Length: 267
Image 1 (cartoon, rainbow, N blue to C red):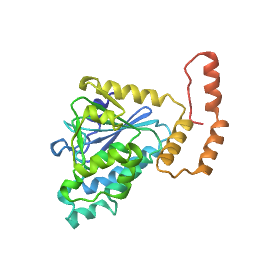
Image 2 (tube, rainbow, N blue to C red):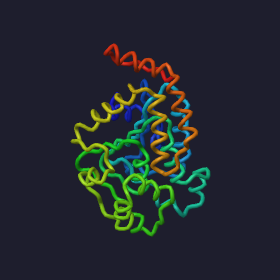
Image 3 (cartoon, rainbow, N blue to C red):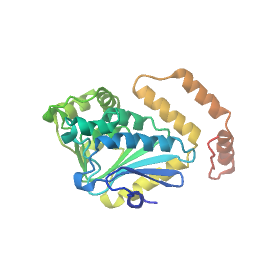
Image 4 (cartoon, one colour):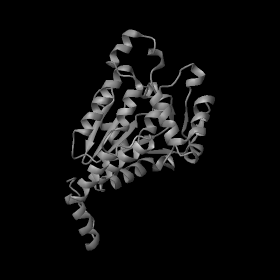
């Protein structure tokens, strides 16, 4: 199923982020195209619930994040920042909590980026393992221009993923970054023509879904921890031992020797 088709089939409740599942792939879609898919306070708890749902499904191997309409997402709804009644709908979560939970999702994640990526959603995409965008997109971080001091986890993520100099350039100048520059500084994993976006996302999602899940998911966790300078060595050793004892390792070795495609079961 293409990302576009998944997006269209995941719109049961207009405005609310939705989850669609097709085989080993999950797709979460932002559904406010008229508002550039801004994230409302009530969406924070819903997104975390969807991440939990993905983690609870052992058959899933990959998660795609996408948005309907011309833009990926405009980030948090700034007009709701000082509205206590609206903020209460977040159930005690802030935007950074939601993004950090996304970064910790068990399966590899892909951000399918179209049009514009703004504000907090630049960090949301950065929390994904892969970011695929098309020529003509742009992103910018307007916090400094709006008088907003960004949250700690987002600042750390920018520095750990993109380096200190690029993070300063993005946060301290509110400069708009075109697609080619986003690829150059490492924000984008891949840059393709607009008409190739869905096929490229599909190909990457399919490739990840074919990998050995115990190894891939364990290495994802370790790499993220290393990126933040917080590697849990004891937990890493346990995951390595589990992979060594797994049926998946035997399947990988056998398929290599037999020159066939492996079929991994995640055990």
